[in-house]
Amino acid sequence: MFKTLFELRAPAGPHSPLSVLIFHRVLPEPDPLFPLQMHARQFDAVCAWLSRWFNVLALDVAVARLKTGTLPARAACLTFDDGYADNLQVALPILQRHGLKATCFVATGFLDGGRMWNDTLTESVRNCQRPVLDLSELPGLGVVSLALDTLTLKRAAVATLINALKYRHPLERIALTEAIAHLARVALPTHLMLSSTQVKAWRQAGMQLGAHTVSHPILATLSHVESHQNIVDSKHTLERLLDEPVGLFAYPNGKPGEDYTVHNVAQVRRLGFEAAFSTQAGAAKMGDDVYQLPRFTPWQPDPLRFAASLWANMAAQR
Image (cartoon, rainbow, N blue to C red):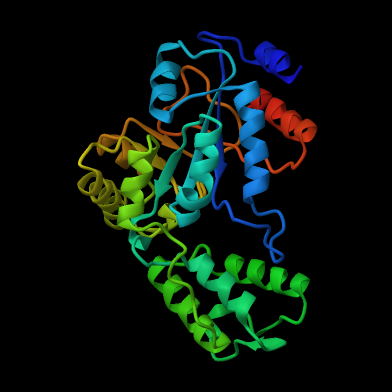
């Protein structure tokens, strides 16, 4: 039934919308702190639905066919942002079992033992053993203390800290997150992100890679020189690692006009990327700016609501 309905919304040819889905982590088991985080059983179900309802294409193929108006009916792509190791360890076997392709957009500065700033915050809060985290030593943070004695309070604390730091300059953001970890007195993981060897293994498995900057900054907060360097260095790092061109890019955080600007779009175009992706909801259509293609994250855990969210996204006006 769903396959037929999606074909009505997305017929083959020049009027076919392209649905590009975003994922981040795929955990082996559900996370009590963040129960909505994607995990293996849920991702397996999602892949089963998508393989039945959609024609899932490699991202570069989909972009080329979008440009020429030759997409198949019910065209879709899967993407992962940031470069988490569980994309290879957990998600890849599931993708292979369902015969699906995916693209991982890698923030290259965190390869080989690095850690994203938001994960530093999350793991600091998760593993802190005290009921209250005193942050009064960090007056520039704007948060004095955080109660941590229940999972609900810990969840709220992570959100508070991320909101306080997201739009800071990357250097300030890293300094504050490391200071918070020190005050929380926790040991931080160094295995969350892909290694260089794992990046190669992902590609050798037939999956694709794209650039996602070096340090995952909010590009709109950087100077033109800083943003250019962050973008080009991520591209060149992956190209050296893979010994092939990297033509796909995803803007960190990805809200048009807020997280990246028209100047950043121009930088991506001048650097020779073939396409770039935002986090603006909606499905891509022929004639859209290929350097600001939309993507969508469906969170619904059951097939009916998952299908309904995809249907609505395909019809969204942008």
